[in-house]
Image 1 (cartoon, rainbow, N blue to C red):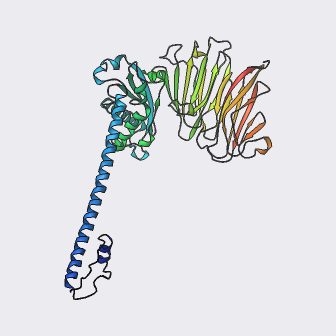
Image 2 (cartoon, rainbow, N blue to C red):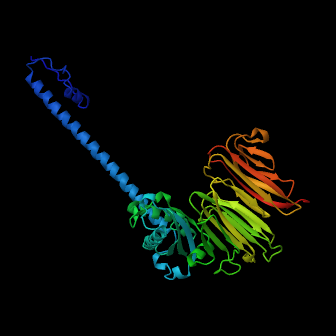
Length: 461
């Protein structure tokens, strides 16, 4: 009887790899078993085919998965954009065609920087004029033709050009119910991203290179932009000399009780010192609030000083940390002709000032940014006699542990002879007289800063 020869089972996944690597075949024990050799050869071919097919299938499945992910992402983004537009709860068919005329005005103000290397050789005044027209047209085309913002866009304009920075404003019209519109479609983030994306894709505005990351935008005060738009109650001051004085704060084309705005620009390597004074005791002023910013875009974080007056004889001196200044006067029954203002260009090492209002605020130079090395600033606070001063330090971060008096040597703030250094939580300081001196001293270039409000209080209370 013939003896049966056992043919071992082959693991197609593992043995195929071994066969491809020329590993020994233990089940072939006789060289004359031709049939077995043929069978093993067929198994090899079949195994390799299955492995190859399996790899192809894996690759196909992987690509299918990637395609599904990409399509899902695109669909999700599309849905978000649609929801953002529809979230305004205003259908295209129900948008009042007269909205741009009778709608509620919403203003924005911003700035954009051009590359220093893209400036033309034409005079700066001519360059600014040409570039302003180009930028205004680009903003109008961009927001007016946008499917999302075109319904609400009204106008745009450029109100100042200095060196490499250009300042602009935008106006949109809102319906009565506009909370969701402001939150989504006309949010600062949305409008800012639209402009930045356009600049990234284009890269230039009429052959002038721009920096998309430099674009800034924020909600603006209606009165400020309206004044910029019509050119009333606004004074543009370019300091070409060391000093410029205006004997009256009244601007010719502005009525008596309107708010006024002074936009001042000095040389790039100077700071601006502002002196505001009046000698009229008991004037007709019942209130004037003065705020100074070291930028032409009003921002609480860029406030240099603010104070209020009620018709008293005063002299205030404030030094900004840069060559840009915006001074705003908000009035309630006040004749600004009784006030004078002087702008002086001083070295960038200068800081401090004289604060004579019954209340106000002051901050460290280059507030929230790195200040220069070896800085020494002095503020003199003066209020009416028989009053005392309360200072509220709402921010105080000079770096390190909170210390007081003799332990403060390198970086400190000295208030009426008492030194404070390190990081402190908000605290109050009470003066013993109607005047005091504040000195800020720092040897290092850090993002050290402080911000304080002060007010006069009756000494007998």
